[in-house]
Image 1 (tube, rainbow, N blue to C red):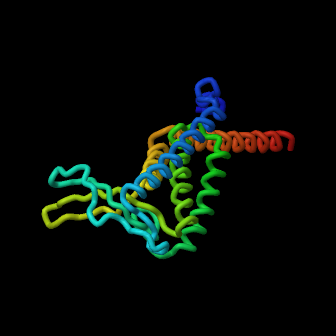
Image 2 (cartoon, rainbow, N blue to C red; image 1 turned 60 degrees about the vertical axis):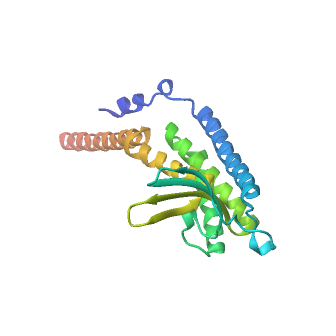
Length: 221
């Protein structure tokens, strides 16, 4: 496959308009952010989820059960998370806040600067950025994050509770999943393969040019 062939494989006529794709995914980002902040505000009222540092109420003592299948269940339970997604790295507020800002800016640069036509990549980045901004708002406001989704499973040896999470966490997880899938099986993987083929073709072309130049010099001597 030649470099021309690989370039034609991603001809503009066969790809979505890049600017339109970015605008659509910016809308996805806004929807993810609004959904996260709205759901947190609603659940904060419903569950009485007020910061203890402000002298208000903490979460309800009993979760609001939504689903119980015996071996798995789902409920609303308000908690404050001083760590990152799913309760990891608790208590590192300053470090987490700094890293979140840096990572979010980096993701925004990637999102806006990417020339990839991959829908999954752009949607994934939009979801991650939207989720990161939602949790960043909480960290700036309270130095911790409002979580309210409780999922548990009974594996026979007792009930195991997954760390409480929120809509932002879901957006981040799905966004990462989309990007990984795209890099392995989607347009991102194809673009990486085509890019490698272009580099290989250009390398072979340069080698052929050097060989012809050497032949010409030998002929002249």
